[in-house]
Length: 68
Image: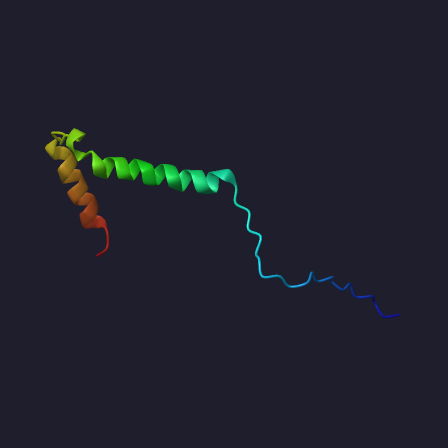
């Protein structure tokens, strides 16, 4: 006895596409953009920190270990 095949019912083709995003998919990039924009607009409040020379040597060693 042959098995029945289920056929899908197709909706008529329309010109619109329904895409739904969660709220955080829009909010997180907007917040990140705003934070980066604030960093660019107000660079006068950023101060260079006096770093320990050991940190620079450590970063140099780590960069030396990475393949070029």
